[in-house]
Image 1 (cartoon, helix red, strand yellow):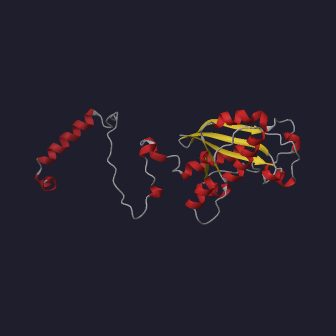
Image 2 (tube, rainbow, N blue to C red):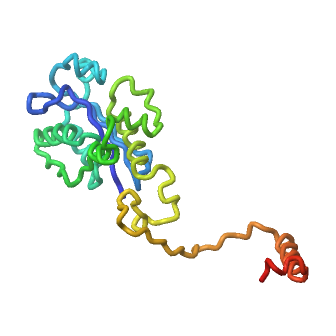
Image 3 (cartoon, rainbow, N blue to C red):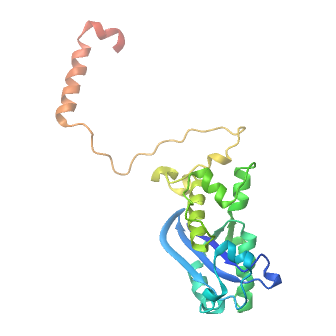
Length: 236
C-alpha cells in the first residue's frame, strides 16, 4: 500500500484571499513505513510574505524569489504523488491550497477520496486533549526538537512517524501476518466475540535450537523418569 505523508507551508490561511503555497513536503510510505523517497519543493508565491507567516515557517519573500513558480513544478509533484493516498494532518487546509494551485495552472484537482485526514483519526482515537502534531509527537514519544520552525518536509516526516504509531507502531503485525489478514483490534467492540485465530504452519520450518546431543540426553532423561516409581503419579 503506497501512501504519501504530506504537508505544505503557505503565506497565510486562506487561498481565496490571495494566500499562496510556498513549500511542499512529501514522504513516501509503503505499508506505513517510509521508503526513503521524498519530495521537497520550494515555490515562489509571487507576492510578499506576511510577518505572521514568516514567524511560523521562516521563509522570506527574498529566499523564495528565485524559486520556481508552482506551474513549473506541478508535474514533478503530481508524478511523485501518482495514485497514492495523501496522508495529511488537517487535510482541508493543505488540499485547499494544492487544488487552488493546480487549478491556476489548468491541472486536474486531487479528489478527496485520495486523501486521509489524520486529524480526524486522532480526534476519534483521543477524544480528549490536544491532537496537534506536536501533541501527538509527545504522546507517542517522537522527538520533534528540531521543529523550531514549521517546515513542510520535517512536518511530513514527523507525521509519517505519528501515522505509523497510530496504526500499531513499528512492530505492526510483527511481519508475520499479511495486511489482509491483520486484525484491527481498535474496531472490535466489547459486544463482538473475540475469536481465536488458527495458527498457520510456517512455510519453512525453523532449525532446532537444541543440538543432537542435547536432544538425545533429554530423551534418555524422559526414559529414566518413566522407570522411576517416584515420578509415576505425574506421568499418569
